[in-house]
Amino acid sequence: MRKRFYIMFVARDSDGQLLKIPIPLHYLYVFVAGAVIGMFTITGMAGSYTRMLAKTLRFNQLRDEKESLKKNYNTLEKVAQEKEIQAASLGSLASEVSTLYGLKSEPLLTKSADGFSDERFTSSVDQFYALRSSAMSGVATMAVGFGARNATLTDWVRLAAAPSLWPLQGRIMSSFGERSDPFNGEGAFHRGVDINGSYGQPILAPADGVVEEATVRNGYGKTVVVNHGHGYETLFGHMSGFAVTVGQHVQRGDVLGYVGLSGRSTGPHVHYEVHINNTPVNPHKYMRATMDQVGVASHGD
Image (cartoon, rainbow, N blue to C red; front, top):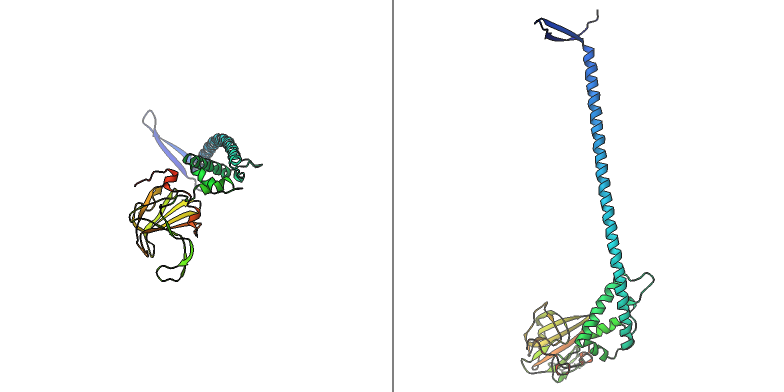
């Protein structure tokens, strides 16, 4: 005979009598199954709601990013238009300067089919300020004095940065090029010019620049090297003392050091070199004016 199992609930009625309520066991299985199904249903609904909430937040985020990109695009568009106007103005200025001094047009300042690129705009702004600075300081006149014709504005600015000032007013004792070594009489190449001076006489910066060296070199003694940009460097040897330090910015006419006879020297003088792109050239070509001629007051004297 098949056994049947029941769940028995015991309670009391209003008279205090015990009541027994038998429930078949398979009803419990049905209840538990229903509870489990309900739990999974609720869990699924909660998961769907969470996913929907995440999608909504992502949508709002993307919408905000779109609005931000739109604003940035509008801003960049305005900046580009302003650059176009400024570059066109600078290009007009370049044409006027070219006409005035007989210079070639600067390619980077000539508008192309694709308008003015960032490189063209940056170049035009840099050249504008360089030209303005040169004109205000009188250096532009010196650049034109080099006699360069059929040059571009870039060439003109480069010439304006050339070391045109005599570092020392004195007699040239030894020129650039082949000579006899004063110590052994043998043939040697002289990389600069030797300018005679009095011991302790100030040695001046021939152009604006940054001091790259202020040290003692073998043969040169106490030496200063100045970087003037545009490939120009100058070297001053046999000093008796320094007036500048490495990294210092100097202006045309500033005192760099003082005449001496340190290193291999036969007497007080300054050994002066001009380098273009690390190649020594004849300094005399660039020595266009003295302090008295340009009327520049010596700094630090």
